[in-house]
Length: 144
Image (cartoon, rainbow, N blue to C red; front, top):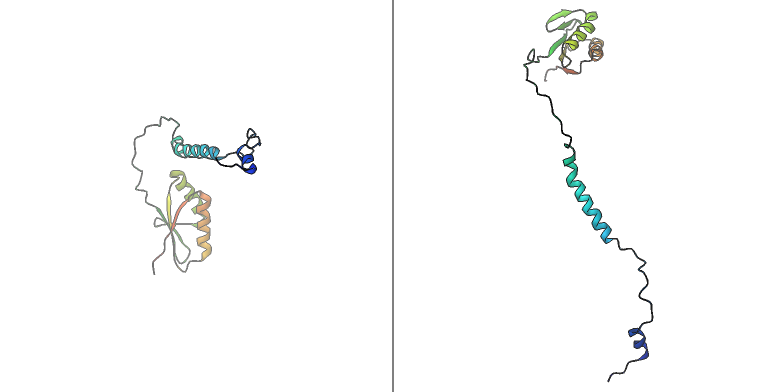
């Protein structure tokens, strides 16, 4: 027979109360649930962007009035203004640009200026273009 010492007997028949509630919170299930919810939201979020049912109107494509050829504004060395090759007084430019924008809000302009043209002339033309509401402007330069 084996002899049991008093110390091992106490351990074998412990008098501590095992029925006490666990004071630590196990967060592993919480993390698992949160990760599953995160994956669900990530997967379903792109599907919700087009979830609004709409009946869009049907239209027939029409040909543009002109081939969207940009209107050319030129400034010569003496400061003379030309629109599509026709001479124009500087005072007439704002009204002409307003008319162009009224006819076609998406009108495109190209601006060409001689290298010796005073910057003030170019700046006034750019200001008139901006005031007219025209937003499509290309400045034409030559490559070296």
